[in-house]
Image 1 (cartoon, rainbow, N blue to C red):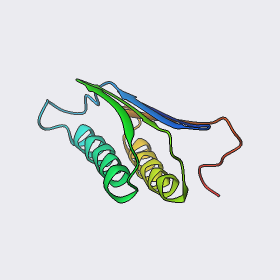
Image 2 (cartoon, one colour):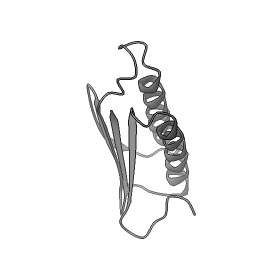
Image 3 (cartoon, one colour):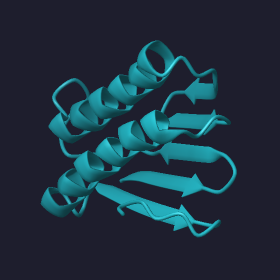
Image 4 (tube, rainbow, N blue to C red):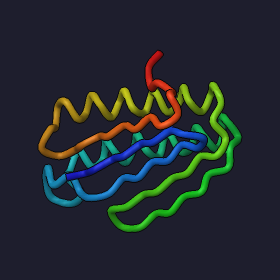
Length: 109
């Protein structure tokens, strides 16, 4: 199962780990969807929002820290959360998304 934890406080953090195990490597549509969403989010943050990211990538693991939270970075992250939550509803056995709000922020206003 892919486990994704997204937390917002003074900084935004995301940790994704595991494997979807929906199908064989190279044919796993859940893994491909999650990878595409995460890569698109990272590209958007760096290229459109021009924020620097602290990232760590390994096989089956991604850790991201965003120190600069503004309207644009938050909007891109909300889009990511919505998309991941849709996948989670469709593939409950393969992906779990956890959201934490520590500073009173709300993911959806």
